[in-house]
Image (cartoon, rainbow, N blue to C red):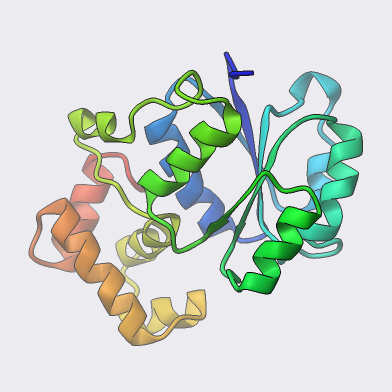
Amino acid sequence: MPISTPHLLIIDDHALFRSGLRLVLQNGLPQARVSEAASLEEALRLQGEDAPSLLLLDIQLGGLNGIEGMAVLARKWPGVPAIILSADDTDYTVRQALQRGASAFVSKAATAEHIMTVIARVGGGPALCQDPRSDLADDKPQFTPRQYEVLGLLSQGLTNKAIGRRLNLSENTIRGHVQAILLALDVDNRAEAAFAARRRGLVS
């Protein structure tokens, strides 16, 4: 059944990733309300009137992990679908997530368009998600949540090496993300990227 006024809850212990995913969701779902929790325990403290209509859940969390915690979430919010978002996209992990009740599994490396497509499918179709291409009219480029993380740190003046250390990624991987960001923003260097990102409201 389509969700008329969706409330999406992100459960992830990495604040930068939550911020990036929130921007993806707000760009693709301007009519939705997006909430965040850093742990399952924090999510479970939400009151009844704040019940989500869709969960976006990481696996690696402090305390109870996402796969084990889906049963707890299902007891609190029966019938609310959960999408697992994880950097661990091995066949075993995907299979475990789906067997435990996840409605879908999405790699954290997925594009914003793919994430929105999965949300639309799980949440009931077009009533939940507008065409991901429509945000082009708002002059907001499509980035993955990881690229939003990189963009936020880049805008703070961090080098590729420092960003890599912060995100536990190789410098070469960060360099690839930065090149994709420069291309998407149609700028020539990091300073211009930071300025353009702030002007377009992509970072605070």
